[in-house]
Length: 496
View: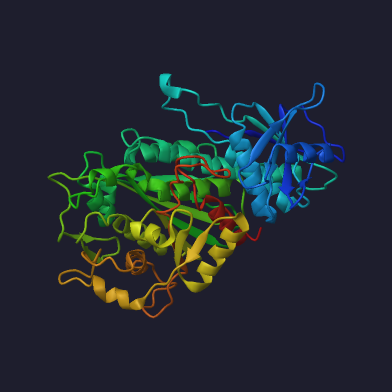
């Protein structure tokens, strides 16, 4: 896990011993305006001479004075907290190979300072566990980051604690997603979840195949029965004394998705180690809530299975019994994520939390609709609005999608309560998955006419893996999308 050491220095005349000081600049029609740091006019003239445009992801290094640190100037377009988070992150990411970096950015409030520190911490991530002789020209990430805040009365300790917790959560997700499926499978994922929770005030419970069968988790068992490496369900509970609200998180954890007997093409299997991102995300968010001592109960359900073809794999037309008794006819074994999530949603509903959010790399259709930067969001109107608000506050890109009632009839089954897919019909695939999942969300009490528990579904299939070219604080590989928004959501549930 790559998380830098963070500090905040409060001073009207900030100074630093860092190797590089990062300042921000913005280009006007005829001049460059340096927005922070010293020697602003001189730096502005230098930047104009070298053609600095002040755009996103633009970073130039200039020599310091005397024995002082060198200066790195990063472009800072308008945009408040989001722009500062992005600029700090892109600067630290591009300054890999530098041991210590100081950020002297125009952060005028505690929220802006926190955004800058968070972006910088996220930008320092690297995954090198599997690189040895082939490491080539890879540079070590920045190990120490100091945020210089001139004349501010912000709570430095609180800023550092929150930015560190967010960075640790994102790094945990990225580490798990980056790990090859040879090494990360349901059993080892469960072990790593327990190890990550060590020392925190959380309780971890693991269901193996025998216990899954005894407790009726037929979706997880069914998806995992084609693999020699059996499925698991992991429950992580953070329940601080006095918590009055309960947020449940359910994550899809397909450690490798071959498609099962509905086999993917060879190129479609590349990257399928990412199919456990949802489970990694809900684990990381629950642990972050514990690290931050949020006064809210958070329960994470990690639904883990490896979807493989074999003589024991489920077949199209097989019927699985989901926890709680509802049956599903499997018409597409490559629509497996919704099967494991169904078990998780039922289990989460049994505790009647105040809200349930599921997270999954669920459908390619979501990526077709929204591209690779936006996550699809659907569910109960009020909770969707709350999740959208948390995403906006944290600078994440979610987009609300409908749950069309007319789609329910398209997944009727002749032999079971519901089918998991409508093969041959690609219309509204992401929405159809949401309509399926909604069937397994419980109600607020035992009455059949009681309202459903507030629920939101996040389909992160598009943005879970960043594009080939890095941007902002996001490098190549897994992006840890939705981690920051869900931490913010947990904070809102706790009243913070």
